[in-house]
Image (cartoon, rainbow, N blue to C red; front, side, top):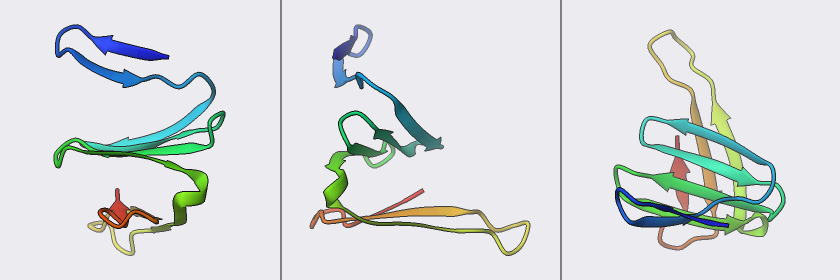
Length: 87
């Protein structure tokens, strides 16, 4: 299904099934369980990509070692232009 934001005239696809998502600041990802795809985005850099499961090489994370550190999620893809996404 496609939806249109009348305020900005932007159009994007809405998933038809179950979705798992994570957003932090201006970036994040959503996993569409029905279509077996992952949407990665960084609004600050205006980067948006959708990958099939087979195009995701690895997903890993790091936990903070001190209170001042942040946790990080890293998604590695087969994409030549943006091979790594960090959240």
